[in-house]
Amino acid sequence: MKKTYLAKQGRLLIDGQIDRRQFVMRTLAAGAALPTALSLADRAFAMTPRKGGHYRVGTGHGSTTDSLDPATSENGFSSSVTYAYSNHLTEIGPDGQLRPELAESYESDDATTWVFNLRGGVEFHNGKTMTSDDVIASLQYHMGEDSKSAVKGLLAPVVSMTADGSNRLVIELEAPNADFPFIVSDYHMPIFPAIDGKIDPVGGVGTGAFSIDSYEPGVRATFTSNPNYWKEGAGHFDSFELLSIIDVTARQNAVMNGDVDHIDRVDPKTVSLLSRAPNLRIEEGTGTLHYTFPMRLNIEPFDNYDLRMALKFAVRRQELVDKILLGHGALGNDHPISTANRFHNGDLEQREFDADKARHHYMKSGHSGKIQLSTSEAAFAGAVDAAQLIANSAGECGIEIEVVREPKDGYWSNVWNKKGWSACYWGGRPTEDWMFAAAYTDDTEWNDTAWKGTDASARFNELVRAARAELDMDKRRAMYHECQALVNDDGGTICPMFANYIEGVANNLAHHENVATNWDFDGRKASERWWFV
View 1 (tube, rainbow, N blue to C red):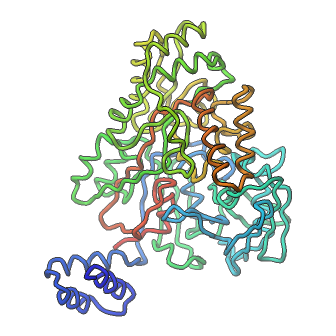
View 2 (view 1 turned 90 degrees about the horizontal axis):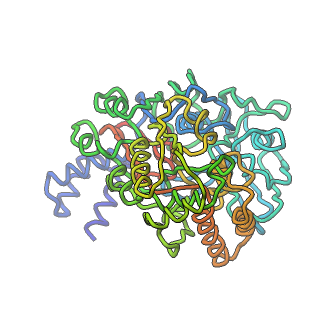
């Protein structure tokens, strides 16, 4: 009863219906001690969004090959830029649930025909009012045979898009997809203004909380608050600055010295050190972030099933969780679906290090000689050490691995998705279909294992399509469980661990109670959701 009363008084204080003195007096009357009453008042004020300030973020992502073009966005620097100056039809909220964004609502009776009712009066930074024509042109940019978009495969099932007036959009799919509203929240699909049915993908004009002042690919981006931002209770900072600081030590020094206010990808080894800094706090969340070592089936020797299986059995996964994540994460099982997903297959046997099985499959593969594993701290903090640990455990199995340390800059354009075996990370996706369609189906540009042409991959693609159209949740669960087993067995992914998002945050930064964990930085939307106290 007392807790409920205090919570009510806190809401009254935040809403301005009572002042600080009244709140303290009522809290004391409820039996709280004076220090407790003052602390509660401070906490309540901290939860009240305030306007102003220059928000500086240091991110461990970025490459000089980055572009404003959202179709080619491939790291957290680019997606943070996109989220700052643009919006999408839908978004993942701080509670992890899907909610409308530029769409006021969405609906479907059969999961094949989807109707998006758009918000009226939303303005782009150039003053143009958003209409359904802008949405159609923005989505069409990622479609068609000539598209180079990373989400070309996600939108391939779209048969038609029709404007039913200026604020209503009808999208027809070739088959039912119960998760389609999730798909259009993907960071590659912002809505831009259209001229004669075409968008300018690098024009930097969106509907977001900030407008772009400057943009240096993979280096720095600066923004100014959009005075006409349509979203209530969002966009609190006067300005926003995003800095690419790939080196983890430099990034952590920057936040400790007060040069930035917020960093991502804190090295688990230094969590204790940063938490002792008087100007900082550590915030940590568990979601779908996972670290992988993809083997490309279109490059020898990884086209050999037994070679892939030998390497999978040669990895000490718990050692990686203990030594690389220092416990800030969980075991992976060579597929991308975490316990945070609805249809995680908890019955699938956890793969363990097994030297005998590794030797058996390695001998059966017929391979001899060194196997190169490319790695870089650009992939994730500790990626180089993780690769060396894999090389060490593989050596116990008679498998010789040469760890190739690649340059940080250009890693995502020159190494990942090109070289035979490399280190990688995936933020994961809120749904199984989205994750599989983004990185594992045979029609996505980001199939970083080139998993195609095997009987198992054919079965996998068949199941993904069937599960997408299945509205019976039990049948859908069984399909996704089999999908995870197929990736685990035949796929080219070694996924040893799911990592927590660990961030260093200045004490004067505040946010609402929930923080999204679909990406770091509150789903990479901290720039519009957080504020200074």
